[in-house]
Length: 372
Ligand code: HEC
Ligand code: HEC
Image 1 (cartoon, protein in one colour):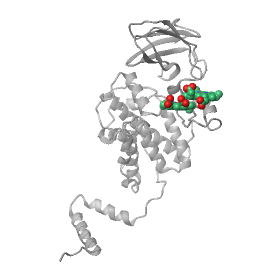
Image 2: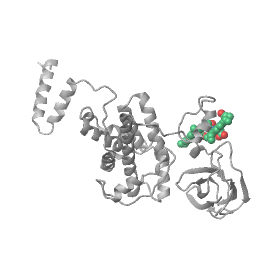
Image 3: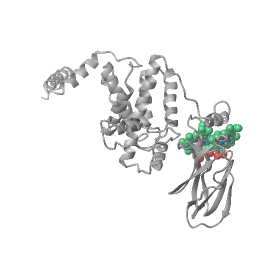
Image 4: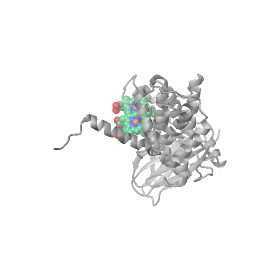
């Protein structure tokens, strides 16, 4: 007759099996952890935080990036491993891999920068809902406006202080104006003339992983020391655009991202004149007059129907004005006047500006000089 395994038998057998496993070196800690976890109470949220060394966390986050944790778990892991050392439980029981999905802006979808995702998860673990909002705004707002990787991140590489040395030289910096992985990485690739697959691009993201981890630690250290003050203010375009599209009026747009890199100013499209119906090549001509004040004319040509973008950037790579905002043009030559105003209608100060044209795979930049 077949003997049924009773619940009691089963428990005894597995119990014995567990004892067997305990004897195997290396696995014992696993079993002990499982046993203690069953007995101990879960640490209530928010979890404990203690002041950390931002520069040590930077180096660890950079290290994790290169050791298969990528950006999101890299930032998150850099901080939780420091907390595990400083505090122990509950940080020792949290796998940094929970944030792996955040890599490449969310499984390579290029949405929210993975570093920002990992950092915000950590902030949400150690603060209440009401506290986390301003801290996350501060971090994401900083990221949107910062030159990345920071000069400090580059300096650590030049000094040979990272643990991974795939590329230790200086790297170009750019201001992406966006918390999106896609905008941040793509703009950097264009600025640096590198491919996504290049070691320099990976090292760039490794340094940004360290930058975001270090900045998060700075913010949290200040917050828990009672010295945090928020410096982030919404970009002027967000305030201006949301004065109609926001909750007070239409209530049909929900974002804190700067509107103008994606939309330009759709209510004040710049007049583009057609000056010729044929063109044999893509071309962005030098503006005239140059130097100029207050306005200057920019000509471009396209040899085939193409969506065109023509934008003015500041010396730090920040978008100033969208003259042509991804609009479809037929073959021909065109000209547009830039009146020396930014997307918010404010006159810009004297200095160097760049006209940047993109049409299909074509991209060209011209340097312009506004004098006053
Ligand atoms: C004075 C109020 C007002 C302000 C300020 C404003 N809008 Fe609008 N916007 C409107 C109205 C009205 C519409 C048309 C309503 C509709 O279609 O729902 C519209 C439509 C749009 C549309 C969709 C239609 C289109 O023309 O492409 C976009 C995109 C848009 N606005 C973006 C912006 C951005 C970006 C800003 C800031 C630079 C902004 N708006 C500022 C009132 C405003
Ligand atoms: C990362 C790019 C991005 C940013 C930043 C952004 N938008 Fe959009 N927005 C889009 C896309 C993409 C759509 C969908 C466009 C479409 O389907 O034509 C859209 C749609 C809209 C629409 C409806 C458009 C329509 O054709 O009716 C409005 C209005 C709008 N956005 C306003 C804003 C405002 C205001 C801001 C800033 C507070 C903003 N957006 C920030 C990308 C962006």
